[in-house]
Image (cartoon, rainbow, N blue to C red; front, side, top):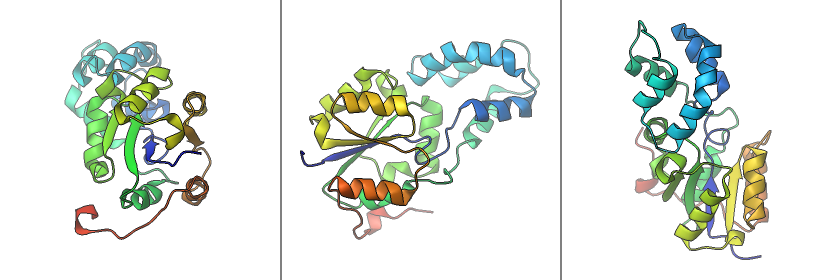
Length: 218
């Protein structure tokens, strides 16, 4: 087995809650009195374009929520969407923190997220402290489980699949990564300790001293 040089992380379902999944959508739609059935019929096509960075949040909302006159503004609705992002109950953030302070491992984000939500999550949770590179769908115009987003990450990083670990909560995303020789870990019904054990089996070193630059500013 090649030496592991890079760990790529999904965000929703691994570190944070899924920021705009069906449960989050249902809560926000109810809060604003938006008909869920009508919204969900419009969501998939608009969301695909939004998560790929082809349209803005304002355009997404015009296509899904503001198809009729509302008593609230797009900014108010978007703020409620952003508020849905919280730490996952079984967050793997402690493991990410340990890896982040290992100088021998590169750490990247490989996730599906719309730009406004993604940027908010990076800032709100200080994720820029941990990641060296961001292969987010909104920046690269590709979404998992499209094979091309994984190949893009490998090409940009100039690494082979067997030197990369990928962590994701969705089985189909994990399976595509595995098909490319990537060591993919399905973070579903797992704990940080479970993940830590799997990474140790792959030969990764966890831990290390945190210097001043690695401390959260909160």
